[in-house]
Length: 378
Image (tube, rainbow, N blue to C red):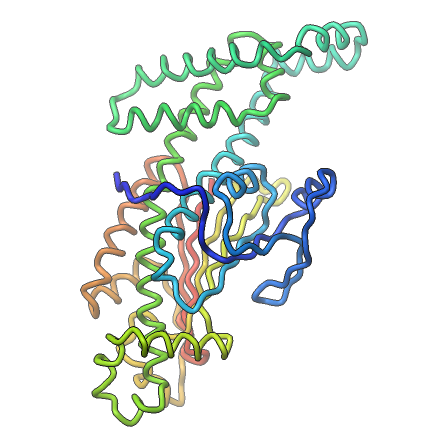
Protein backbone atom coordinates (compact mmCIF):
# COMPACT_ATOMS: atom_id res chain seq x y z
CA UNK A 1 0.00 0.00 0.00
CA UNK A 2 1.17 3.54 -0.74
CA UNK A 3 2.39 5.36 2.38
CA UNK A 4 2.37 9.02 1.42
CA UNK A 5 0.12 10.65 4.01
CA UNK A 6 2.13 13.24 5.95
CA UNK A 7 1.27 13.86 9.59
CA UNK A 8 0.29 17.41 10.50
CA UNK A 9 -2.06 19.14 12.92
CA UNK A 10 -3.18 21.71 10.32
CA UNK A 11 -4.01 21.77 6.62
CA UNK A 12 -2.38 24.83 5.09
CA UNK A 13 -4.80 25.44 2.22
CA UNK A 14 -7.07 28.48 2.16
CA UNK A 15 -10.59 27.22 1.51
CA UNK A 16 -14.30 27.76 2.08
CA UNK A 17 -16.22 25.19 4.12
CA UNK A 18 -19.95 25.22 3.34
CA UNK A 19 -22.35 23.90 5.98
CA UNK A 20 -25.48 21.88 5.27
CA UNK A 21 -28.71 22.31 7.27
CA UNK A 22 -27.51 19.99 10.05
CA UNK A 23 -24.23 21.89 10.26
CA UNK A 24 -25.96 25.26 10.51
CA UNK A 25 -28.28 23.91 13.21
CA UNK A 26 -25.31 22.53 15.16
CA UNK A 27 -23.49 25.88 15.02
CA UNK A 28 -26.60 27.81 16.09
CA UNK A 29 -27.21 25.51 19.06
CA UNK A 30 -23.57 25.76 20.16
CA UNK A 31 -23.25 29.49 19.42
CA UNK A 32 -20.50 28.98 16.87
CA UNK A 33 -20.28 32.04 14.58
CA UNK A 34 -20.58 31.41 10.84
CA UNK A 35 -20.59 33.72 7.85
CA UNK A 36 -22.40 33.97 4.53
CA UNK A 37 -20.28 32.50 1.72
CA UNK A 38 -20.50 32.52 -2.08
CA UNK A 39 -19.38 29.50 -4.07
CA UNK A 40 -17.64 29.51 -7.42
CA UNK A 41 -21.06 29.20 -9.10
CA UNK A 42 -22.33 32.14 -6.97
CA UNK A 43 -24.46 29.84 -4.82
CA UNK A 44 -24.82 31.03 -1.20
CA UNK A 45 -24.50 29.10 2.06
CA UNK A 46 -23.36 29.58 5.62
CA UNK A 47 -19.96 28.32 6.65
CA UNK A 48 -16.35 29.16 7.36
CA UNK A 49 -13.50 30.62 5.32
CA UNK A 50 -10.14 29.68 6.81
CA UNK A 51 -6.57 30.22 5.65
CA UNK A 52 -5.66 27.07 7.57
CA UNK A 53 -7.86 24.34 9.00
CA UNK A 54 -7.10 22.09 11.96
CA UNK A 55 -7.12 18.39 11.11
CA UNK A 56 -9.22 17.57 14.16
CA UNK A 57 -11.71 20.34 13.35
CA UNK A 58 -12.15 19.19 9.75
CA UNK A 59 -12.43 15.57 10.81
CA UNK A 60 -15.26 16.45 13.24
CA UNK A 61 -17.10 18.51 10.61
CA UNK A 62 -16.95 15.73 8.00
CA UNK A 63 -17.58 12.75 10.29
CA UNK A 64 -20.46 14.64 11.91
CA UNK A 65 -22.07 15.06 8.48
CA UNK A 66 -22.10 18.87 8.81
CA UNK A 67 -20.56 19.91 5.46
CA UNK A 68 -22.12 20.18 2.01
CA UNK A 69 -18.92 21.22 0.21
CA UNK A 70 -15.32 22.41 0.46
CA UNK A 71 -13.97 24.78 -2.15
CA UNK A 72 -10.40 25.95 -2.72
CA UNK A 73 -9.20 28.29 -5.47
CA UNK A 74 -5.47 28.81 -6.00
CA UNK A 75 -3.24 30.06 -8.80
CA UNK A 76 -1.28 26.84 -8.22
CA UNK A 77 -1.34 23.71 -6.05
CA UNK A 78 2.22 22.38 -6.52
CA UNK A 79 3.44 24.16 -3.39
CA UNK A 80 0.53 22.66 -1.42
CA UNK A 81 1.25 19.00 -2.23
CA UNK A 82 1.50 17.77 1.38
CA UNK A 83 -1.55 19.73 2.65
CA UNK A 84 -3.53 18.47 -0.35
CA UNK A 85 -2.66 14.86 0.48
CA UNK A 86 -3.69 15.50 4.07
CA UNK A 87 -6.95 17.16 3.01
CA UNK A 88 -7.95 14.20 0.83
CA UNK A 89 -7.04 11.71 3.55
CA UNK A 90 -8.97 13.52 6.32
CA UNK A 91 -12.03 14.15 4.12
CA UNK A 92 -12.35 10.58 2.84
CA UNK A 93 -11.71 9.08 6.28
CA UNK A 94 -14.27 11.43 7.88
CA UNK A 95 -16.77 10.66 5.11
CA UNK A 96 -16.43 6.93 5.79
CA UNK A 97 -16.78 7.43 9.56
CA UNK A 98 -19.98 9.41 8.95
CA UNK A 99 -21.31 6.68 6.66
CA UNK A 100 -20.33 4.02 9.22
CA UNK A 101 -22.24 5.76 12.01
CA UNK A 102 -25.36 6.03 9.89
CA UNK A 103 -25.12 2.46 8.58
CA UNK A 104 -24.48 0.99 12.03
CA UNK A 105 -27.33 2.89 13.69
CA UNK A 106 -29.75 1.80 10.99
CA UNK A 107 -28.80 -1.86 11.34
CA UNK A 108 -28.70 -1.85 15.15
CA UNK A 109 -32.13 -0.27 15.55
CA UNK A 110 -33.60 -2.80 13.11
CA UNK A 111 -32.29 -5.68 15.24
CA UNK A 112 -35.44 -7.51 16.51
CA UNK A 113 -34.31 -7.66 20.15
CA UNK A 114 -33.42 -3.96 20.19
CA UNK A 115 -36.57 -2.94 18.36
CA UNK A 116 -38.67 -4.85 20.89
CA UNK A 117 -36.86 -3.19 23.82
CA UNK A 118 -37.36 0.28 22.37
CA UNK A 119 -41.07 -0.40 21.93
CA UNK A 120 -41.36 -1.70 25.51
CA UNK A 121 -39.58 1.37 26.89
CA UNK A 122 -41.94 3.68 25.05
CA UNK A 123 -44.94 1.86 26.53
CA UNK A 124 -43.61 1.35 30.07
CA UNK A 125 -42.60 4.44 32.07
CA UNK A 126 -41.13 2.40 34.93
CA UNK A 127 -38.92 0.43 32.54
CA UNK A 128 -37.76 3.66 30.93
CA UNK A 129 -36.84 5.18 34.33
CA UNK A 130 -35.10 2.01 35.47
CA UNK A 131 -33.06 1.88 32.27
CA UNK A 132 -32.10 5.53 32.58
CA UNK A 133 -31.01 5.04 36.19
CA UNK A 134 -28.96 1.97 35.30
CA UNK A 135 -26.95 3.62 32.54
CA UNK A 136 -26.78 7.25 33.65
CA UNK A 137 -23.24 7.02 35.10
CA UNK A 138 -21.66 6.04 31.77
CA UNK A 139 -19.22 3.54 33.35
CA UNK A 140 -20.61 0.88 31.01
CA UNK A 141 -19.31 2.58 27.82
CA UNK A 142 -15.63 1.60 27.98
CA UNK A 143 -16.33 -2.08 28.78
CA UNK A 144 -18.79 -2.20 25.88
CA UNK A 145 -16.25 -0.68 23.49
CA UNK A 146 -13.69 -3.23 24.72
CA UNK A 147 -16.17 -6.03 24.01
CA UNK A 148 -16.70 -4.76 20.46
CA UNK A 149 -12.94 -4.46 19.99
CA UNK A 150 -12.43 -8.07 21.16
CA UNK A 151 -15.18 -9.25 18.79
CA UNK A 152 -13.44 -7.45 15.91
CA UNK A 153 -10.10 -9.07 16.78
CA UNK A 154 -11.71 -12.52 16.97
CA UNK A 155 -13.43 -12.12 13.59
CA UNK A 156 -10.31 -10.64 11.96
CA UNK A 157 -8.31 -13.68 13.13
CA UNK A 158 -10.64 -15.95 11.13
CA UNK A 159 -10.06 -14.02 7.91
CA UNK A 160 -7.11 -14.40 5.50
CA UNK A 161 -4.01 -12.58 6.82
CA UNK A 162 -3.41 -9.12 5.36
CA UNK A 163 -0.34 -6.90 5.33
CA UNK A 164 -1.93 -3.96 7.17
CA UNK A 165 -2.90 -5.77 10.37
CA UNK A 166 -1.68 -3.02 12.72
CA UNK A 167 -3.31 -0.27 10.68
CA UNK A 168 -6.54 -2.23 10.44
CA UNK A 169 -6.64 -2.53 14.23
CA UNK A 170 -6.09 1.24 14.60
CA UNK A 171 -8.90 1.98 12.16
CA UNK A 172 -11.23 -0.41 14.02
CA UNK A 173 -10.47 1.43 17.25
CA UNK A 174 -11.16 4.79 15.57
CA UNK A 175 -14.53 3.54 14.32
CA UNK A 176 -15.48 2.03 17.68
CA UNK A 177 -14.73 5.35 19.39
CA UNK A 178 -16.94 7.09 16.81
CA UNK A 179 -20.07 5.08 17.71
CA UNK A 180 -22.58 7.52 19.21
CA UNK A 181 -24.01 7.02 22.70
CA UNK A 182 -27.56 6.22 21.52
CA UNK A 183 -26.26 3.29 19.46
CA UNK A 184 -24.03 2.10 22.30
CA UNK A 185 -26.97 2.22 24.69
CA UNK A 186 -29.08 0.13 22.33
CA UNK A 187 -26.28 -2.45 22.12
CA UNK A 188 -25.85 -2.49 25.89
CA UNK A 189 -29.55 -3.17 26.39
CA UNK A 190 -29.62 -5.96 23.81
CA UNK A 191 -26.65 -7.99 25.06
CA UNK A 192 -23.98 -9.99 23.20
CA UNK A 193 -25.72 -11.13 20.02
CA UNK A 194 -25.84 -7.72 18.28
CA UNK A 195 -22.21 -7.01 19.31
CA UNK A 196 -21.02 -9.96 17.23
CA UNK A 197 -22.83 -8.48 14.22
CA UNK A 198 -21.29 -5.03 14.85
CA UNK A 199 -17.78 -6.47 14.47
CA UNK A 200 -18.40 -7.31 10.81
CA UNK A 201 -19.58 -3.77 10.06
CA UNK A 202 -16.57 -2.26 11.87
CA UNK A 203 -14.14 -4.47 9.94
CA UNK A 204 -15.81 -3.64 6.62
CA UNK A 205 -15.47 0.10 7.15
CA UNK A 206 -11.96 -0.26 8.58
CA UNK A 207 -10.96 -1.87 5.28
CA UNK A 208 -12.65 0.88 3.28
CA UNK A 209 -10.72 3.57 5.19
CA UNK A 210 -7.56 2.20 3.59
CA UNK A 211 -8.87 3.51 0.25
CA UNK A 212 -7.80 7.01 1.38
CA UNK A 213 -4.17 5.97 1.00
CA UNK A 214 -4.82 5.35 -2.70
CA UNK A 215 -7.08 8.33 -3.36
CA UNK A 216 -4.70 10.93 -1.85
CA UNK A 217 -1.69 10.32 -4.14
CA UNK A 218 -4.01 9.83 -7.10
CA UNK A 219 -5.59 13.23 -6.51
CA UNK A 220 -2.25 14.99 -6.04
CA UNK A 221 -0.72 13.49 -9.18
CA UNK A 222 -3.77 14.46 -11.20
CA UNK A 223 -3.84 18.02 -9.84
CA UNK A 224 -0.18 18.41 -10.78
CA UNK A 225 -0.91 17.10 -14.29
CA UNK A 226 -3.78 19.59 -14.57
CA UNK A 227 -1.55 22.38 -13.31
CA UNK A 228 1.10 21.56 -15.89
CA UNK A 229 -1.48 21.85 -18.66
CA UNK A 230 -2.84 25.02 -17.07
CA UNK A 231 0.61 26.70 -17.01
CA UNK A 232 1.28 25.64 -20.59
CA UNK A 233 -2.03 27.21 -21.61
CA UNK A 234 -1.22 30.46 -19.77
CA UNK A 235 2.23 30.59 -21.36
CA UNK A 236 0.85 30.15 -24.88
CA UNK A 237 -1.40 33.17 -24.27
CA UNK A 238 1.51 35.33 -23.13
CA UNK A 239 2.21 38.20 -25.54
CA UNK A 240 5.94 37.51 -25.83
CA UNK A 241 5.49 33.74 -26.27
CA UNK A 242 2.92 34.27 -29.02
CA UNK A 243 5.58 35.97 -31.11
CA UNK A 244 8.45 33.78 -29.88
CA UNK A 245 6.92 30.26 -29.50
CA UNK A 246 10.36 28.66 -29.51
CA UNK A 247 11.00 30.31 -26.12
CA UNK A 248 8.05 28.63 -24.38
CA UNK A 249 9.84 25.72 -22.69
CA UNK A 250 12.77 27.88 -21.57
CA UNK A 251 10.44 30.44 -20.03
CA UNK A 252 8.28 27.82 -18.33
CA UNK A 253 11.41 26.57 -16.56
CA UNK A 254 11.77 30.01 -14.94
CA UNK A 255 10.05 30.36 -11.52
CA UNK A 256 9.63 34.10 -11.99
CA UNK A 257 7.87 33.60 -15.34
CA UNK A 258 5.51 31.01 -13.86
CA UNK A 259 4.77 33.32 -10.95
CA UNK A 260 3.95 36.14 -13.36
CA UNK A 261 1.59 33.87 -15.29
CA UNK A 262 -0.23 32.83 -12.12
CA UNK A 263 -0.59 36.43 -10.94
CA UNK A 264 -2.16 37.35 -14.29
CA UNK A 265 -4.47 34.30 -14.12
CA UNK A 266 -5.56 35.19 -10.58
CA UNK A 267 -6.36 38.75 -11.62
CA UNK A 268 -8.54 37.35 -14.43
CA UNK A 269 -10.34 34.94 -12.11
CA UNK A 270 -8.75 31.94 -13.83
CA UNK A 271 -7.30 30.28 -10.74
CA UNK A 272 -7.59 26.50 -10.48
CA UNK A 273 -10.67 25.27 -8.61
CA UNK A 274 -10.79 22.23 -6.33
CA UNK A 275 -14.26 21.38 -5.00
CA UNK A 276 -15.33 18.53 -2.72
CA UNK A 277 -19.07 17.83 -2.39
CA UNK A 278 -20.92 15.53 -0.02
CA UNK A 279 -24.14 14.03 -1.35
CA UNK A 280 -26.72 11.91 0.47
CA UNK A 281 -29.10 9.56 -1.36
CA UNK A 282 -32.62 10.72 -2.02
CA UNK A 283 -35.22 9.22 0.29
CA UNK A 284 -36.29 5.84 -1.02
CA UNK A 285 -33.66 5.76 -3.79
CA UNK A 286 -31.61 3.04 -2.12
CA UNK A 287 -28.38 4.69 -3.27
CA UNK A 288 -25.24 5.28 -1.22
CA UNK A 289 -23.64 8.41 0.10
CA UNK A 290 -21.30 9.98 -2.46
CA UNK A 291 -18.16 12.07 -2.23
CA UNK A 292 -17.36 14.09 -5.38
CA UNK A 293 -13.94 15.68 -5.90
CA UNK A 294 -13.81 17.95 -8.93
CA UNK A 295 -11.21 20.18 -10.53
CA UNK A 296 -11.70 22.95 -13.07
CA UNK A 297 -8.73 24.45 -14.94
CA UNK A 298 -8.01 26.51 -18.01
CA UNK A 299 -6.34 24.46 -20.70
CA UNK A 300 -7.14 21.05 -22.15
CA UNK A 301 -5.31 18.18 -20.49
CA UNK A 302 -3.80 15.76 -22.97
CA UNK A 303 -3.72 18.31 -25.82
CA UNK A 304 -0.34 19.27 -27.23
CA UNK A 305 -1.16 22.94 -27.82
CA UNK A 306 -4.16 25.25 -27.66
CA UNK A 307 -3.36 26.23 -31.25
CA UNK A 308 -4.53 22.76 -32.30
CA UNK A 309 -8.13 23.89 -31.77
CA UNK A 310 -8.27 27.60 -30.88
CA UNK A 311 -8.61 28.74 -34.50
CA UNK A 312 -10.91 25.91 -35.51
CA UNK A 313 -14.45 26.88 -36.52
CA UNK A 314 -15.94 23.65 -35.13
CA UNK A 315 -14.92 23.36 -31.50
CA UNK A 316 -15.89 20.18 -29.65
CA UNK A 317 -16.92 19.26 -26.14
CA UNK A 318 -15.37 15.85 -25.53
CA UNK A 319 -16.37 13.55 -22.67
CA UNK A 320 -14.64 10.47 -21.27
CA UNK A 321 -13.61 8.94 -17.97
CA UNK A 322 -10.42 9.66 -16.08
CA UNK A 323 -8.70 6.43 -17.15
CA UNK A 324 -9.12 7.40 -20.83
CA UNK A 325 -7.81 10.92 -20.17
CA UNK A 326 -4.76 9.66 -18.28
CA UNK A 327 -4.03 7.18 -21.07
CA UNK A 328 -4.08 10.01 -23.63
CA UNK A 329 -1.95 12.24 -21.40
CA UNK A 330 0.58 9.43 -20.74
CA UNK A 331 1.00 8.96 -24.48
CA UNK A 332 2.04 12.62 -24.84
CA UNK A 333 3.89 13.05 -21.54
CA UNK A 334 5.85 10.34 -19.75
CA UNK A 335 5.31 12.17 -16.46
CA UNK A 336 1.59 11.36 -16.62
CA UNK A 337 2.20 7.61 -16.42
CA UNK A 338 2.46 7.68 -12.61
CA UNK A 339 -1.05 9.11 -12.38
CA UNK A 340 -2.30 6.21 -14.51
CA UNK A 341 -0.65 3.71 -12.13
CA UNK A 342 -2.24 5.41 -9.11
CA UNK A 343 -5.63 5.38 -10.85
CA UNK A 344 -5.36 1.63 -11.50
CA UNK A 345 -4.39 0.95 -7.88
CA UNK A 346 -7.26 3.11 -6.60
CA UNK A 347 -9.81 1.32 -8.79
CA UNK A 348 -8.58 -2.08 -7.54
CA UNK A 349 -8.69 -0.97 -3.89
CA UNK A 350 -12.25 0.34 -4.28
CA UNK A 351 -13.43 -2.86 -5.95
CA UNK A 352 -11.87 -4.95 -3.17
CA UNK A 353 -13.59 -2.96 -0.41
CA UNK A 354 -17.04 -2.68 -2.09
CA UNK A 355 -16.58 1.03 -2.72
CA UNK A 356 -17.83 2.39 -6.05
CA UNK A 357 -15.33 4.65 -7.82
CA UNK A 358 -16.35 6.52 -10.96
CA UNK A 359 -15.12 9.53 -12.89
CA UNK A 360 -16.10 11.93 -15.64
CA UNK A 361 -14.07 14.31 -17.79
CA UNK A 362 -15.27 17.25 -19.87
CA UNK A 363 -12.78 18.72 -22.35
CA UNK A 364 -14.45 21.90 -23.56
CA UNK A 365 -12.69 23.42 -26.58
CA UNK A 366 -15.12 26.34 -26.63
CA UNK A 367 -14.29 27.41 -23.08
CA UNK A 368 -10.71 26.14 -23.32
CA UNK A 369 -11.04 24.32 -19.99
CA UNK A 370 -11.03 20.87 -18.43
CA UNK A 371 -13.47 19.72 -15.73
CA UNK A 372 -12.78 16.40 -14.01
CA UNK A 373 -14.91 14.76 -11.31
CA UNK A 374 -13.90 11.73 -9.24
CA UNK A 375 -16.71 10.12 -7.23
CA UNK A 376 -16.56 7.66 -4.33
CA UNK A 377 -19.88 6.06 -3.34
CA UNK A 378 -20.46 3.95 -0.22
